[in-house]
Image (cartoon, rainbow over all chains, first blue to last red; front, side):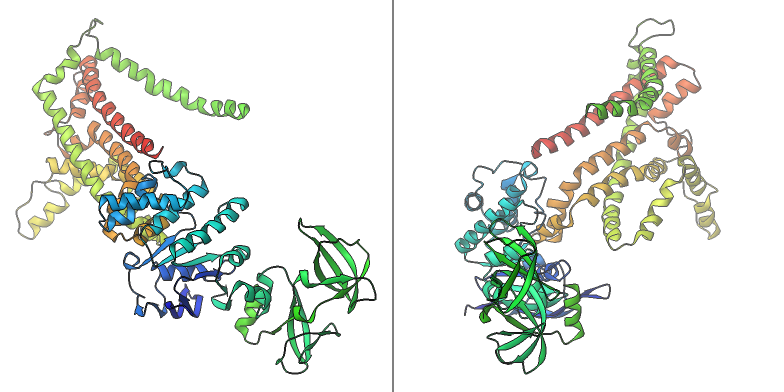
Length: 357
Length: 275
């Protein structure tokens, strides 16, 4: 694959005795769009701050292109940050904000002018040079913050929940814009968010974090389709999360009902967690499915209907474009490929992850 | 909306009465006395009396000493405020209290305290003579007056600067560092410009009371160093020449108004820049 650019080497960090990051080990490649995804307090922002140099890890090291930069101050690092609240310099206009880093580096005037022009064009704010940053909308301020960072030609752009304060429509537009900018700049983006939709849309690699641990790392498809544990399954998208028994290879039971699956290697008669995405729960006519139930709720969601089905006292959630009636008796079918089997948490840490998730 | 505005208007009423009774009417009286002679006839003589060498020297001394005191306050307050803001972040509020509490003490009390410290037979000189050294001339000097001004008016410098520094988002400072600024560049290019409105209001709040003081100069200057405030006080309280006192007050008022205009203009140009 691509060249290794950053290695967070067994990083630990705690505040006031509370561990925020525990032995986090992460490799980031050149030109990769990596998203650190997790609930608040999972350690994702701390990871970003350690990368930027605002925090020093208690243990472990930050390796950048083979060099240890753990104790390098932020102004000496080839990374730039886009902050959650934009953190623009309110005593300067747009152009001065963007020129800040270049002036510090004593670039000549015409170079700075060109860069400002280029950056404003890239973020779609041409002609905004002399505007005050205080009178810009949130979305415009965000673009200035991005322009201010990228003119320095960083090797890596760190983005800390940059779209968090924008409304839904603008957020979606900015997601596409960020992907476009990333492709145009060909640099590494490290993006922190708690929004799984954002993560799935933009990333090459998603790192799901919780309680200072990496829960799972992979492409958006693998994270969504093959969650490795209950936390990931629960955090990414809607899901039905059931306890089950792995009877033998390619066969599990949920509430004693056998379901064929495609997973192997979980032993025999072992308790496991099973995740089934609501869109994979097929509702069929009574008598035609694996298990029977009664529809208890029908909610219109726009693209689809969300239906809750009571099966032997357990609630199954199904998504379908075809609505059912409340109290209607239905059967459920699940394609073996869509049954995802996961190990039950073993250690206490993993257990904590699960309870808090 | 209209209703809230009307209520807000009522809420302002007590102060409007207060201001009318104790600010506006006295001010009109000062202008009246300042521009009339003892027979009530219009004259500029009271204002022109500032040209009298004794008066203009007192005005010059007041301007000089309060200017120095303001600069000293600024140089003391700014680093202190940076420290306080930092200390508060690490929840070291006890230290903050320790530094703030003495400032709540009564103004006169503190000035008297300094008098007994600096006197010929005061704490410092008693100590010096007891170890066989010559006593120093501390009280009744320009230095003593500046010390008294700084000590008394320092809180007025600290508060606005502290608020301005405290308002600066930590991420803005991080952003400057992130963009390559050293800690020194971050201070000069980001922190100081952002705290400037606080600095300007601090300067105004120290300079004006220092310029007009007569208590500090009479207690620590021993009546030997006259500031314009002392001259005005004596005209009112000793010579009973209200006309001359008011005339000189009007001159002082011009300097105060200039100071306020300058500070308002600086703040406005900040806003213009922003808009």
